[in-house]
Length: 386
Image 1 (cartoon, one colour):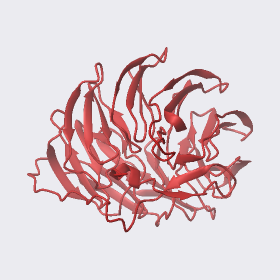
Image 2 (cartoon, one colour):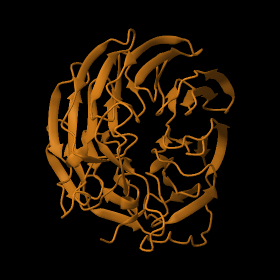
Image 3 (cartoon, rainbow, N blue to C red):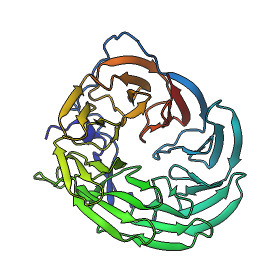
Image 4 (cartoon, one colour):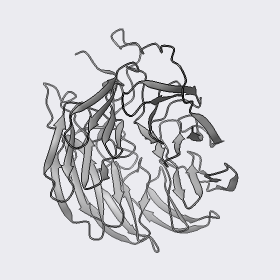
């Protein structure tokens, strides 16, 4: 079987299930394979707009885990594998807080209304105040690789056993749990849940399924197929929605690993359009287009209303390309060498490039409009701007 670059991401079967139970998870990259595609060499470009590192802080490497920062007010909070938590002024890069929780952490941080939320490798959800004092601890059913999310009333966390659980933000009391059966093999992902205000949760699931869940009671609002698994082997049939679904302007869009990209009417769950583009990296949108990084590193743009292909940028193939993020009106992606690439949102042509180092990022860069937040595997937290 000729494996695309995206499939290299999930090539080695591991019984991660973890420390606390769960399904077998496909992780890692093919190494030493003569058939592995070579990264596309970068061609010289004219830098019309150069992405710049506005500020950066270091938290240490994250090994087999992937971390994401969170914005609360004007402060970016970020956590590292060894329990370090740092707060940085989003505008100046000035460090406004640093706490050693002494906890072994397994994923990114959540932040809302003066409270911080982290998950440990031992399967606990822990709430802290901004000074690092523990507010409460709650036991999870398995380890969580995805950052907790909060709407101020409840905290949601996705665990490796496929459960999405909600806890009271003030007390840590368990409120509800949503679960679907897990297949034997799943794509290891670091974020496939999107909290939409205090109303709904978009949940990407194995088997190419997407669920929209009521945030208050955990009730299923609707469920639909993003992509249908296909192929002769169990590995080929993996079509997990392993990146964050997107909600915007009455539309919900999601993409499945080695599967399809599909957009739905947010209220009814009726499919609007679908395209044969697979991804475990993720997607983003602006008012007109949807942008997605394919399994092989190709970046695509589609018209949001019709699904018509707007442009394709294939000069980053096999370079471990991140999910896209909007930086002002441009599309930003990072490759596995820590190089940031700016693409025109209209044509997909390169308009700028800059090495930001720090290694690759396995979580989706976060757009704040005039800047993008990135946390790398090397443990650096960066704010990129024009």
